[in-house]
Amino acid sequence: MDRIAITGGAQLNGTIPVSGAKNSAIKLMAASLLTDEPLRLTNMPRLADTRFLGKLLTRLGVSVTESDDGPDGQQTILHAPEITSGFAPYDLVRQMRASFNVLGPLVARSGQAKVSLPGGCTIGARPVDLHLQALEALGAKIDLHEGYVYAQAPRGLKGAEIVFPIVSVGATEHAMLAAVLADGVTVIRNAACEPELVDLQECLNAMGAKVEGAGTPNVTITGVARLHGATHSVIPDRIEMGTYAVAAAMAGGEVRLTKARPELIESLSVKLEEAGATVVRTEDGVIVKRNGSRLNAVDLETAPFPGFATDLQAQFMALMTTANGESRIRETIFENRFMHAPELMRLGADISVHGGEARVRGVEQLEGAEVMATDLRASVSLVIAGLVARGETVVSRIYHLDRGFERLEEKLGACGAQVRRIKGDGEPEL
Ligand code: EPZ
Image: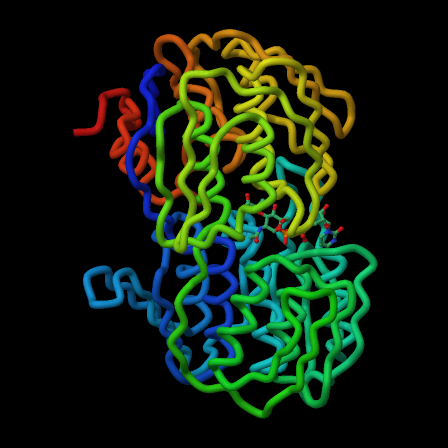
């Protein structure tokens, strides 16, 4: 298996273009199941997760065509003239939980589906009860057998009021994807407000759907009989953007993040400023600067958007490991999302975890070591720590990293970081 080696100590100076958002792209790809015409997605990231989903969609009858050198850059055309199978097997769904989101579009388009339950996850239990609750509210008959969800709506889905007891990004997206072809009006209450929901609304509306209110807690969907093809540009990846913003604050120097939008990471920018970094909001991103002085410890609590993203918590914890003072970090979205803490401690960080709160007491200097990635965002937090650790840090199990960060070594390397990939046989990649 590949590993990443980082030699600490180099400042970051340069420009990093932000890619399209993984967490939006994979829901937009699922939307292709809703129409017999082609859906063209531009600003597409090329990631392991988009490849996984492409593989599953192909099994369901979608042709997936990627091209990277057209006038619109990286694009994917997804075309499902007909659904040839409504079956999403365990071996594909377990590799990526978001594959579960094909269930709603399959039922909406062809009246039935058999989709594997996704199973466990290293960051928390992550049940799908709210997804199923939404589909049942829309009139689907749901049965669970032997690890599979059997969903049926032979006469189509019906518009309904869906009231979520807690905010869920995935369940809100799933409900939207299912309700666009339902008969009548659907109102989703206590909907997630993440920017990826707005992106999904824009894509669905470009396909002829009638969705309003995404980005607020109340989303209204007036069902239509059919959707058509469309072209849609994937929203910039706010988590990738935030990750490089934290990397710049960690390593020092000046990094300009482009092809993005500053408001997507405002809650992070405020925390970076509180810690002593400079953040300049620009038209298409941010510039993050830190001169030689040490950052101050700041506290944070994760929250649904526009609060501090749980997907940036591990990176911020890495930043706090060398800050001046003690930082309290509370994780409120997932119950087990501190798996990076013991790995950061292998680099010399001083962290104690009590339930949903971690206390990070900043140390003067981290020391390079071998560490192991446990999930996507945890693995990049180890890379960030490695940027300032003395000597070499080697991160293993980086297949997690490849799920969500496009050309990470190239992007950091272009700013002066000493980062290289070591291929599975132990030899550095040529
Ligand atoms: C999305 O996961 C993202 N994944 C996550 O990013 C992100 O951390 C999360 O939203 C929160 O922002 C994708 O978009 C693919 P949720 P999702 O449903 O939709 C509970 C990354 O690193 N819940 O908003 O699965 C759940 O257990 C990933 O890119 C239920 O109880 O998150 C959690 O505690 C990691 N029942 C809370 O809701 C349900 O049916 C919020 O989860 C669904 C969720």
